[in-house]
Figure 1 (tube, rainbow over the protein chains, first blue to last red):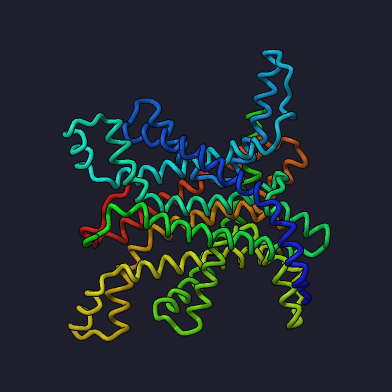
Figure 2: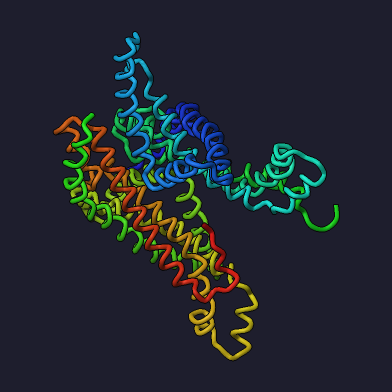
Length: 236
Length: 231
């Protein structure tokens, strides 16, 4: 076996250039997913009629199917829908002019929404009901109580899970290479086949992912210390 | 788009479900062996090996399954040529099973360790105080409780692995997704194929969830305060 150690470094530098795209594919879905998650959580906690069942199905379906399916369904299905709409409404617009990246982001946002809603729900349910009553008893509105009392505590509870979902999506973003996105895995793939050094290129990619994961774990540990300040026992 | 094609594709794809399930079962079996070994190393803090176990878990947790798959697929044959074993012609299923087994092993190890540490220290002391030896204490007191505690996480991990198997086609395994791709090539109806695949995956996950929640109830029937309904 020959491993070209030097080439790992070359590949590392080459693949590292794809980091911004990986970050986009990781962070944008998580942010949109967070908003979707809040909406879904409110629907599920308040048990909004009609929407409640739909929300449950959405979460269960997304969690029950691989992310690859979400990407493929959106990537293949949405253009058909758009072209059909464009046909009926005479738009001068073709689905081929939409970059694939947009479909990937949309699909992963839907994925993130379902997982986020579970995390947010767990966080909100972890806050004692009495806190909400206490907030209302001193005259806060429901919105104020949610924003000032429940949410900060819920976030502290949810932080480890949020870190996990970030790492999870960092890794899920690697699937985007299947629809030919040039993120870390896609770049590794290109470097590998251009130089016919597959193992070295994937080792380099693995090192980058691993490093990113370790960094985000460390950052979370710091954030957790800050977020749980209110909850510290003892004096001072 | 032609919805009726889904009915047409369904039997063709589900006839490859056993390959997907085979990967899952092999991965869980390998994962359990690795997981228990590593959990023991971590719990008893075996010198040197504890370090290695930490690095192993960190690496498996820190890299996407897709990258792990490629590393094993390209790395293992290269590694084995050192001892003059040629696996370059081996079935890609083998590489997939090993990769998913290694990945399961890391998550199982952490689940088992967490569960064993989650059993109260006093239980160990109580077991010793009534004259049990270490093996009895482990088998009769700690493990049953740890198992009940680990089970929900274990179930989640298995379901996660099932979904991960959808990536096995990238190294040329003929599982459901692999078969789906050949169907796409011959019929040019990609959307319908992926819709069918989603339905099958969703069905399998629902069945697994149902089965796990039934066994969870059975496992936790002795728990008084612990059996909080999580739903």
